[in-house]
Image (cartoon, rainbow, N blue to C red; front, side, top):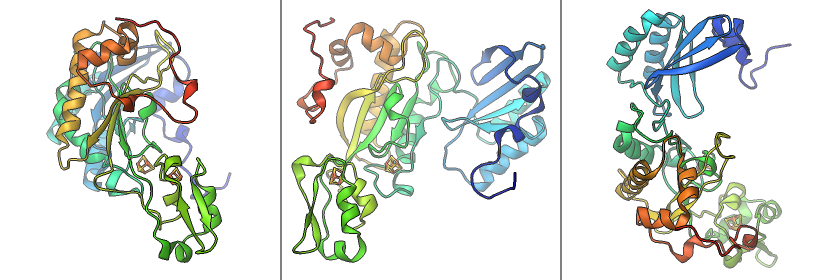
Length: 352
Ligand code: SF4
Ligand code: SF4
């Protein structure tokens, strides 16, 4: 096939030789210590993984540091995980400790395996995207600085996956993470009447609204927003830059809990709303940091071994979750959107 510049190269071209020769024939894996795994093949071959955290938005110098370590100890092989960890892959066990020592010298800490908090997956935030209700990297840095002790240890009941998406379009995994930090807009877009006709295509702007909240104003050749129908998704702003919905007081953060992708013990679960609104308070977002730590600590104290956050909440009941975490339950927790009857709990059974 001819080479193009579209899309990534075929992943199989870059696999370490030991993975190619044992492809589909791995027998088991073990976590040797926080941040270090071994996979053993049916052939008896072993591949060791040293996982370290990454800040996701990285510099060229940082990549060079990673590449130097991979060249020296791993025949050049490393990979990035979907949660922004970096994994060095090697076959020579005797190189593990020197690799870890060298990684620590350049500020890379092994961890993120097993019953830990791994790197927080996050979206673009103020640095890049056009619809964020909050920042991404800034909050993640503040939250992870506070919880860093849980990264390089296995002292939680199970793994805790934290995710951040800076708006509800949700490029991050907030719908299926144990704890999710989600930016929310609380005000409809402000239409700049002068600009709409000049820089926007009105029919596609009207069509962009999933709830039909945008109406054409034929007289002025612009649009109006029916505020009660708006769910603050920002879709229209993507089509029409004359409809910004960012607002310093309206925007903020919500916290969701209990999602997971894993099929172990329980089917995958969606995250649910725990805290409807926290203010944007850069540069260190103390309210968000405190809220996440509180949930982690209450979970760590009350959950059984191997129980994920959602599984723990389901066992004790949501009422108990709110009382243990002392998070107030408000009218904002009740979904009153048009299609909400599908999600209402219709049983009188309560768990206490
Ligand atoms: Fe942009 Fe929303 Fe994705 Fe953040 S979550 S990067 S604001 S689309
Ligand atoms: Fe429609 Fe979303 Fe724009 Fe509101 S923010 S008007 S729901 S597209």
